[in-house]
Every structure is written in C-alpha cells, then in structure tokens.
Length: 216
Image 1 (cartoon, helix red, strand yellow):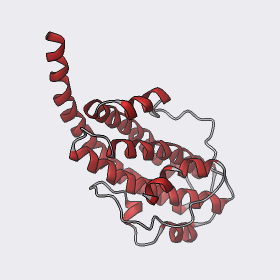
Image 2 (image 1 turned 30 degrees about the vertical axis):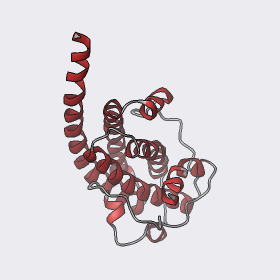
Image 3 (image 1 turned 135 degrees about the vertical axis):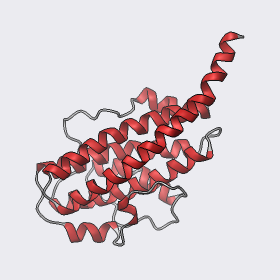
Image 4 (image 1 turned 90 degrees about the vertical axis):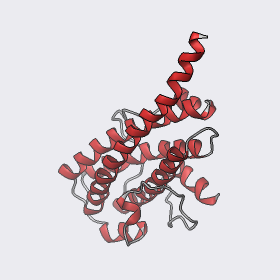
C-alpha cells in the first residue's frame, strides 16, 4: 500500500516543492497500458540527471501542467481500481495508466527541480479536469456509472495532455522533457483508442438497464 499512498500524495508534495526521491519500490499494478516513460531502461531519477540542462518556458509549463493532470488521474485510478462493479478490463486499464503516469510524474518533478523551478500550476486553464462534484460522484457512484465517468474523464485528460505534449515537442528545449512528451503522445493515442472502446461497452451495459427502469 506504500506505493499507492506515495503516488497519490505526489500532487500535494509537488505543490510545496518537495520531491519524490526514488522510484516506487513495490511491484507494479497489473495492466496492459504503460507509457514509454515506465518501460525505459533508466530509472526516472537517472533519466532526469542525464537530461538536466537548459529549459525554456514551454518545458516548464508542460511539466507543471502534466503534473496537475496526473495528480488528479492517480486519484481517479485508485478510486476505480477498488470499486465494486467495475469490469476487469477497466480495472486493468486503470492499473496500467497508474504505473505509467506515476513514472512520468516522477521524471517531470525531478526535471523541474533540476531547473530550479517549482511545480506550482500556471494560470492557464486545464480543460478536461474533473470538478470536485465529479470526483465525488466517481467515488460514491455505483460501479457501472463510475466506470463511464472515469472513462469520460480520462479521455478528456488524454486529449488535453496529448495537445500539451505536441506543443512541447514543437517548442520545448530540454531533451528530457521532449522525450517524456514524445512517449506520452505514442502511449496516450493508443490508450485513447482503448478507452473509447471500453466506453462504448460500458454505455451498452448501463443504458438498457436505465431504459428498462424508466419504462417500468
């Protein structure tokens, strides 16, 4: 359980300028979706040390924004993994996304520290983030309905972070940040396809039940 609490606390730690100093030592969750950041041969701290160097405003804005999205995503993954009534495919997706995003978050946090920049989110809007009310609904709702909200939220997150990653590749300067962005584009485009498929399946199971209740 240490890995769960460590990664879920990442957003709060970053907000006060602290750093996750080592990789998650416990076994990874099961799940087929993993980002390239997780599968690299170097550990996140090694990669950040190797890629510490000049960074421009785009690099810093990219790292801060992705950390903000991932902090919420990690909470969403934990909620859906432990909720009854969620299909095995959605649970496996959440586990894979958790692994990849925790690794990306650590790399970006280390890079920010190497640049002398904090992780305070910028003033720019973060489209696709769930509201407090939606996060509450995700936590308290029944499995099928929460699965739909989770998939919708993660699709919105991915669409937003892919756009951020594309901007970083085109305008960033730091090779480490650009490498994270390139890995995100590749992995998240594949994950989007999978989430869209799972969302169609989840709606097909939930909507007929709702319709039957209404007709009765």
